[in-house]
Image: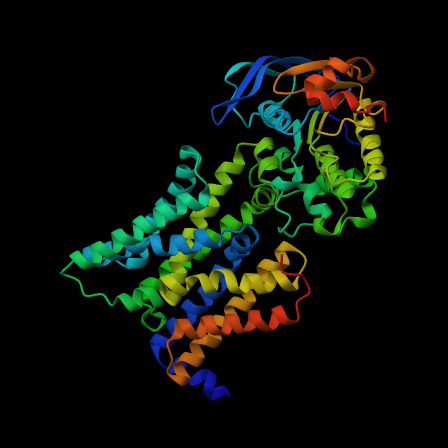
Length: 249
Length: 272
C-alpha cells in the first residue's frame, strides 16, 4: 500500500506569517508548527483566514511577511496535496472516480508520459483503501459529499503526498460520513502524514484530531483539543456566542 | 441519392469546401468539449471577433488571411489570461475589454484600407465555397498541431478543468496548460472562421459539444461524439447549401442546432 515517501521526516512550520488580501490583513503574525504524524483541525468562523492559511502553505498566495517552511517536503514532486472547497471544483466536468484518483499520478509522471501499469495498480489500491472500488466508474456528480471527499483523499494517496490539506472537508457531509472520512485520515496520520483539515464547525472535534489550531486572522490557540477550547479562546473565535458552544461532541 | 452526394464533388471548389467542412466539424467540437465543460463560450466568441485585425492585415499585405489571423488569435488568447492575472480582473472582464478593442481595430483598419476590397459579410458569415488550397494546408497544419497538443496534454487539461486549484498546487504546469489551451482554442477558431465566419464559428465550437455532453458520461467519449456530430452538421449543411442554394455557414449552424434540439428533448444528462 502507498505511503508518503518523506512522511516520517516531514514537518510544516510557519513563522510570523502575514498575508494581505485585497488590502486587508487576512492572516496576521501566524506562528505554529506541525510535525509528521499529526492530524490537525484548523477551526475558526467564516472569514477567519483558514483557506488563506492553506493557500499560503500551498504556495498559492504570496506571504507579505514571515516564512512558511515545509521541512523535508519535496514540493516539486507533488508531496503536498490539496483538497479544495466544494465551490472551487468544476462539477460540470464529467470525470469518474478513477479519472480523479489518476490525476494524483500526474505530478509523478513526466510531461508527456502516459500512466503505466504501476500507476493503474496504485490507483486501484488507493480507491480500494477509501472503500470506493464498487463506485470506481461512477461520475463524481453521482457521489455523496462524503464519498467525494474520500475520492480526493484517494487522489492524495495516489500522489504519495506527505502533507494533506483539506479545506472545509466536512461541508455538506453528514455526521456518519464524517466519521468514515476521519477514520481514513487517522490511518494516514498513523503512517506519518501531516493532515490538516479546516472546518468552521467546532462541534465533534474532540477525539477526532490530535491538535487543533484556532484561527481568527491570528492564532488564538494551538494544541490538543481538550486544552485549547477554553472560554477565552471560544470568545476570541466567536465572540459572546462562543461561550455557549459545546465543543466536546 | 448517390447523385445528391457525388454530383457536387465534380467541382474543385466543392471538394475543397468538403475537406474544409470536415476539418471544422472535427476540430471545433474537439476543443469545444473543453469550452462547454469549462464555461468558456464567451472567450471563444471573443477570440473569433478578435482575430479580425489579423485577417484585415492579411488582405492589406497580400498574405492568406487565415495565416495572418493565427498570431493575432494567439496574442489575444495569451493577453486575456495575462490581463486577468496581472490586473486582478475577472476573465470575463478582460475578454470584454480585449474583444471589443480588437474588433473595433479591425473595423477601423478595414475602413481605412482603400486598396483592398473585402466583403464584410464574408468575414462575418464565412465563405466555405471560396476556400483556397492554401486555406486547406493551413487548416491541416493547425489540425496536426492541435491534435498533438490535445493528446499530449490530455491528463493535465482534465486535471486543470476539473480542479484548477488542486492542479495548481501539484505543479506550476497548470498555468502553462491553460495558456496552451487558449492558444489551441485560437487556432481552431482560425480554421472555423474560414467555413463558418466570425459570428457563426461559435455554433461549431459549442453546439455539437453541448449535444454530446447531454448524451455520454465520459469526457473522452464526449469529445469523440462531439467531433462526429460536428462533422455531420458541417457536411450536411454544405450539401444543403449546394442543393437548396442557401448560405453554407447558416445551414451548418441550423443542422447543428437541430441536432442539439433533438438531443435535448431526449437527453440522458440533465442540463446543468
